[in-house]
Length: 132
Length: 270
Image 1 (cartoon, rainbow over the protein chains, first blue to last red):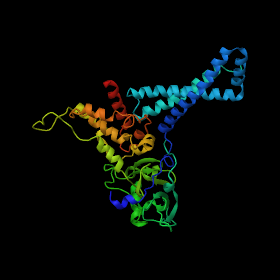
Image 2 (cartoon, rainbow over the protein chains, first blue to last red; image 1 turned 120 degrees about the vertical axis):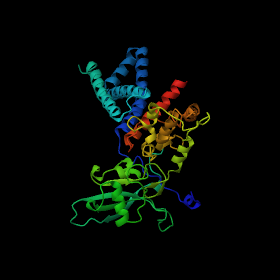
Image 3 (cartoon, rainbow over the protein chains, first blue to last red; image 1 turned 45 degrees about the vertical axis):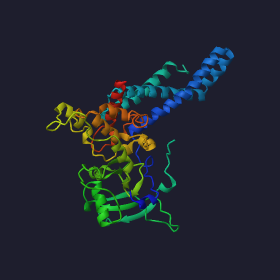
Image 4 (cartoon, one colour; image 1 turned 180 degrees about the horizontal axis):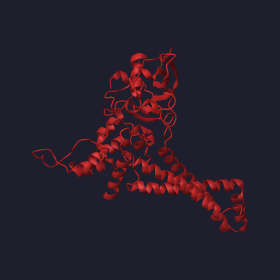
């Protein structure tokens, strides 16, 4: 590079601003996001355990929150996050073993992950339906 | 921490508009092209921000590919438009750019694959030299760092070092889509979010695929040394198998697979 070109501060070309969201990158960032969500969700599990160990009054407070609309909404979110992260994690294991790298297979496995997330979430909420 | 927004000097402003398609043209198309010229300054002598210029052209007056349209614009509309191009048949890798939101070679991208206006920007997250020309010095220095040449200790045979057809398939691929078919256009590296945020230390898919090309070459005798060199939290392991690289490669190669093979070799070696 000549000296002259160093004088100019070059702009950075646009990246996130122009790159069309790809199934590959969107599923990857979702894996990370659901991972973070789940680690926050463990606070709720800790609350459950402490409440259950502390006696009926403490447990009643937990049960009331978990059964409220906000509690149910959060639990639904964590169910989705758990199954997405688990299924996509299995997809990652296959990648780590060197499989599913052909684009067609990578995409097909991605659709399977999305479908399984929905199926498993519906199944869990059907089994543990709070309204039945 | 990665910076997701563009720095102030890189924010894109609205630019000029050119319409050269005649009123009765049947096949009009608008091209929205990223422009930046280091010599264009405002009243205070500060270099102006990049802009998007709009060119409406008649597709009947140019060839079928995006590169044909760019050449038409440069020849007949605005000769200041700057971009790299050479072979116009997908083997030199010069005309790599972001077209309609993904990285590809302008010479291999048919205009009619793009619905609506054709948005063209330089390869993402790179310093811009001018218009669609990114500064690739850093990426090429990273490529040099893997020492992309045959390394041997054994004395040279009287003729060339031979390889079986099966061993050569490791490099070329059964279908010609192996790592050796890479033309180093850097479409993959600049499509990789991990390379965007950590490109200073992460080698990126293009360079890592070439690292694997030499690691898997049966004639090369520096395999262990090469593995040592990439075994690094940043150089190699910033790859999180996002697969934007394989998804965008204009040559249909599979950098993600090559990187996974390096990781496998390192895991087995332990």
